[in-house]
Each structure stands twice: as C-alpha cells, then as structure tokens.
Length: 91
Image (tube, rainbow, N blue to C red):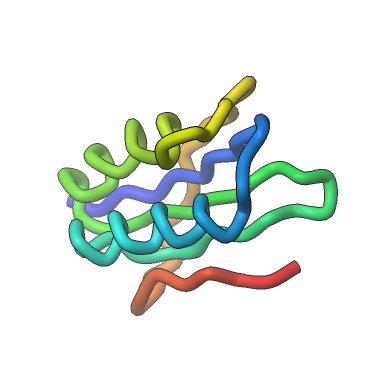
C-alpha cells in the first residue's frame, strides 16, 4: 500500500543539517519526495512510498536532528505523486 504525507515543521532549525538528516533517513528507508526551506523559515517535507517507510519517516521528521528545537508540526495526507527519489530542494 502507498502513502503520501506533507509535514510542515516550525522551530529553531539549521536548514542544512535538517535537510541532510531528513534526506539520509528517507534514502535509508526507501521513501521518496522532497524537503525544502520555505521563505517563512518553516521546513516542508513531502514523503511518499510504501506505508511502512512513510510511517517510519513521520516521527523522524517530527523529531529532527540533534539540537533541533521544534515548536510546531503540521501534518496532512496528500495524493500520491509517484516521485522517483528523495531530493533537497532550494526555495
């Protein structure tokens, strides 16, 4: 079964480290999609793939790398888009 979810993370985050952490975990689990820093400073993470991979990625995204201070999480289910890989996008 396939699943897609979009997560917005707000807090004191170092985008370079946060993006790297999310990409490494997504690659390890076989999840696809993207992570990017939005102009308002939030991180946007779109994850899709097998149900198990996505369900394992959600708490990783909500926790972030060491030294992240996360203040707010927004999560919503999305339509499956069939990404082929996980990418770090620029603005």
